[in-house]
Amino acid sequence: MTLLWRFQISKLPYLLLLSMRRGSFLGGHINIFVETIIIPPQVSVCIPVLRLSRHRKKVLFYCHFPDQLLTQRKSALKKLYRAPIDWLEERTTGMADMILVNSQFTAGIFRETFQSLSTVQTDVLYPSLNTCTFDQPSTESQGLEGLLPEGTSCLFLSLNRYERKKNLGLALEALAALRSGLPPGQRAGIHLVVAGGYDDRVTENVQHYAELKELAAQLHLEDCVIFLRSPSDALKVALLRGSAAVLYTPSREHFGIVPVEAMYCCCPVIAVNSGGPLESVADGETGFLCEPTAEAFSKAMERLVREPQLRRDMGQAGRRRVQDKFSLQAFSDQLYGYIIRLSQ
Image (tube, rainbow, N blue to C red; front, side, top):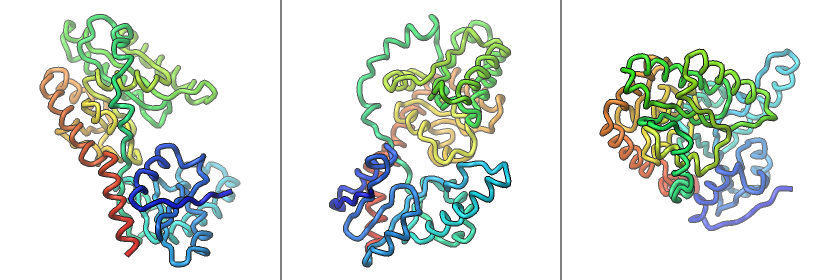
């Protein structure tokens, strides 16, 4: 059953934000009717039905990423199975009156994937950060002292799910390259925490965790790398606040919320120079955008090791950037503008 709720237009940005942060209202089965604007929850296949009964209502569709790119087609049977589904996604997406995407990168992928819609205008609405978790005093900040080895002077953090596509090994290789270029005294205080979502029921999580532990051993990093599986929100915030930088290693991320979380916590970001970070991270101002190589990452890390003031300046600049571009208020104002434009 699909439920239809009516809200005042001034409340929509906040309700849509809640919908996106949790996937959608009540597990994805509530559409939002506001004045004459309908916003379907993440999937486009319902748009034809909405158009049939809309009575001059307009449809705004927020595309996070083409659904057809989230699955593989290694067999002929899978390709045959997906063909009508992919066609339906493209056709129904094009029936929206306005299409928003979460980044310029996603806009480019949208045009490449939906070639029949390549001339359709797409506008960018950056996701917002729910800052409530990050504004609360951390209850685990003291716990970092017990977590980290004594004498830790500079902490780097990798925060991503334990999946191979996240390229977490790059963080380990960059740490090894950094340590090899520093004198023993300075090298001893540098540590890395690799933390991320983990589910022992997911085969890839289990396998990749073991692969990373093995890689750390091969690089002789056992004493300076800590692996955390599914840390609590409080511990994650404490790590972000206490780190010299976040190492964000995935390439071609749709948007990537981790750099935004880091910047809000005044933590510089060292990220791959592709995908969403090209838009979220200001290179040289709130962090560094690098080629996905150990050498490039290690050079950026070394600058932050040697220049504590640069870390502080980048951290403050990152906080301001999130407040200006990725706050709930910025999201609300921009979405409200799109709704007003569409309703005219």
